[in-house]
Every structure is written in C-alpha cells, then in structure tokens.
Amino acid sequence: MTAASGDGRNLSALIGLGICNHVVLSGSRVTVSLDALSRGASALTVGVLMALYALLPMLFAVAAGRFADRVGVHRPMRLGCIGLVAGALLPVLVPQLPALFVSAALVGLSFMAFQVATQHATGSLGTAVDRPRNFSMLAMGYSISGFIGPLVAGFTIDQWGFHAAFVLLAAIPIVPAVILASGRLRIPHVPAETAARDAGGVWMLLQRPVLRRVLAINALFAVGWDLHTIFVPIYGAGLGLSASQIGAVLSTFAAATFLVRLCMPAIMRHRSEEQVLTGALFVAGAVYLAFPFSGSALTLAALSFVLGLGLGSGQPMVMSLLHTHAPPGRIGEAVGIRMSLVQTMAVAVPLLFGALGSSLGLAPVFWSVGACLTTGGLLSRRRVGK
Image (cartoon, rainbow, N blue to C red; front, side):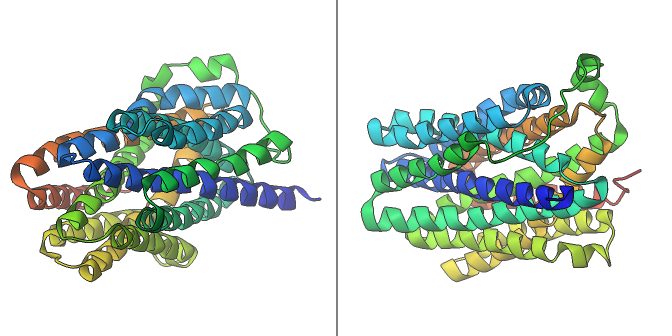
C-alpha cells in the first residue's frame, strides 16, 4: 500500500469516526435544550446549558492540544469516546434537570478532546498542498453529522421520548471506541521537542500576525454558528414548531454546509481566500438581520440554509491556514488555541445573548449579531495570508 493510499484510508476513517461522535454532540444539544424547555426552563437557563458544552473545552483545549503533541492522537480520541458515552447516558440514569447541566459539560469536554486530536491527525496526512482538500472533506463529514444529529434527535423525541434519544446518543460512540481499540487506525506521530512546545508559550503563537487574523475571523464564525445552534430551537419553539420541525430546520443548515464544502475546490479556483471569508461574513450578517421576520418553519429553514452556505465556507480554509502557519511541533497547541477561542465564544454567546433574549426578546439578539458579522466582513477585507 502506498503512502498516498494509506493517508486516504486513514482520512476516511477519521471522517467516519468524527461523523459518529459529532452526531452525539449535535443531537445532544437539541435533546438537552428541548428537554430543559419541557421542564419549564427559561431562555436564560437554556443558554447556560448550551454554554456548558463549551466551558470546559474553553479551559482545557490548549492543554488537550499539547497532550496530543506529546503522546499522539489515539489516547485522547479514545478518552473522548468514553466520555461521550457517559455524558449522553447520564440524563437517563438521573432524570432530573441538574443532570442535564453535568451531561452538557461532559459531552462538550469529551468531544473537544476527540476533535482536537482528529484535527491534529488530519493536518499530518499528506502535504501542505493536500490540507485544504483534507480539511474540506473532514468538514463535509461534520456537515453530514450536523444534519443527522438534530434530525434523529428530533424524531426520536417525538416518537419515543427524551430517554430514548439519550440512550441512542450514548450507544453511537461505542462504535468509534471499538475501532480505535482495535489499532487499525494508524496515524504517524513524531513527539514534539520540549523546547519547541514550550518556547514562548501561547503568547508567542499569538504574536504571529497571520495566526491572530485567522483566529479573529474564526471567532466571528463561531459566534454566528453558536447563535444558530442555541437560539433557533428557542425561536422555533416560540413559533409553535414541533421537535421534528426544529430538528429539520437545524438539519437544513448542516445540509448547506455540506453543499458549500463540496463545491469549495471549484469556488477556490475563482475566488481568493479573503474573498470567500469576507463573503461568508456578509452572508451570515444579512441572514441574522432577517431572522426576526421569519414566521414559519419554511422561512426559518430557508434562512438557515443560506446561513449554512455562508458559515460553512470558512472553516476548512481557517484550519488549513492554521496548520500552515503554526510552528513545527506546536500544531496541536495552535489547534487548541483556536478551540479555546471558539469555546470562549460558545460560553459568552449563550450567557450574554440569553440574558438579552430573556429581557428584550430574540429580535435584538439576532440584529446585534448580524451587525457584528457585517462589521467583521468589512474588516476582513485585509488579506489573511499577509
């Protein structure tokens, strides 16, 4: 077997494992939020629950990246799978509202450990020329799971209830755990030199202008992404939509991210990186400005689809640039910094906008984020790669 074919098989395996575990994360967010709402929780309480998916990843993502640099990707991936099983099963074992808070925190932490290792492994496959395609394929896999997770969760809740949905989500990560335990996935690992890992710490990485700009743009994408995940179920419930309809709306977003990532190689032949990133921010900003005028499942799904086209186009290029410009031996740490920043947004967005939504309604939430994304589009016209 040639190196290229081996890399292709490993990438396919990584994508498959990622799909399974991301189904758990995306499905858990829907199930936890709707279960909390069914128990009478407010928008602020749901916002806190969604923030917990990101709190521990925000604190430990850099450490997880350094851990992957030091020991390789297999151990953090296995630990992530085990944690996902436990986190998804907890609300079944303890069917009370406090268990949802612990479940959200554990699922978020476990998926972060798995994802940082997966992104590290993806960047190590092939050459620098292969990275945009590899990360586009990995992102397409997450688009598939982002489509499947909410849809399966919504239909399972409507048909068999919340406990059945949690049991189903807990069973899924067992498959990746067994595959990883078998040793069939072989990702080469060269331990980073201690001096390379520790030189200057996080601050040294952030002094690199390219990395700062890439991380700033990625933070704006994270705000737009998280707000959709958290507040569209609340907005849809306010319109009287069923769990299946809300799951379908979220799935149209994921379908759009898959479509735009599938077309990314053709797009990149005609548009530069900064043009795609700027266009994505403008599209996302326009959708959020229009969200409060949506009054049905159909219009909400249409806007979610357009938002998915915008936000889904940015992440593969961000990840490719991050791996290209990170110092040797510190790729995992750079990925961890990105993850920590993304999770910081995921903590801040539910708390800040949850409080705003509880006091003023959701329209000001959507409009303020739309204004932020549009402003970011104006500022991102500067070349990312300079």
